[in-house]
Image (cartoon, rainbow, N blue to C red; front, top):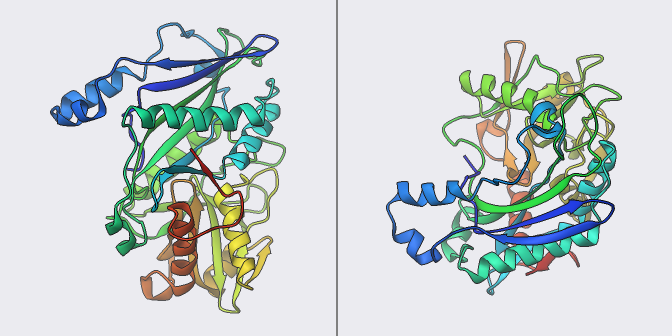
Length: 359
């Protein structure tokens, strides 16, 4: 699994009480080298201790009702040294918009970007960042390490179904590796409904991921790597995966991804792939695509996200029927897009201006 509870020592926290007040908290730790020399169980114990705050309210709108939004972004070791964050301005804007969507006072985008950069820098100064390894290039960075940056909101103490007017914003860093279980293959269409019109599907809200977790667990129990959701109204149009957007490369040469609306999360990686593909002259369409069209007309399929990157989907199963894409192997188009994206993220090649924010 990609994510780890091995939190880095420095954590950022801001509290809204009319204005945002910031602080950096350094949790107890040894040097990175000393921690790595300890038995694995002791490493995990020390890291787990850093996941707790003793001065946060136990009963809150977040803990009781899931009233929280979060983000996920990566800081990646660069080929020429140092570390850089991938498109933090986009995450900052989405975090701000998500908070507005849940009627919270929004966190300023400039504070978000500055906090992510400074938090990564402080942890790096303590040795808590991975170093670039040339061998990552051999498998297109599919086994490469990165720093996972997790900003999230936490409400003030409260009980009763209400909104948060004085939230905290907390940002923590942890380790991250390959996202999907390599022992599982393909995707299955879930019977569950992830999001409904006029709901919170477009918001990166914590509560949205309960259905995703259940559906992905059910898919894994059936032997599938991923699940795919259909729309809530007609139950025929593809929307997204458990925690990622989805693309279909059609036999016509057209690249299709479901158009954004109030039921689909506007992914940063999704947007980046669209820009990269169009830059290569590919006909990219953001439109509705039925499950029937996806299964009959697709040459390749892949999912995208901060953790997923661009991960090929070997097959898609729906109502007992399975369609295999590209002979069950990663297609040339998917491989090319994945490689271009990863090479930019890890500094092997130059990307569009402003995509990589150096720490």
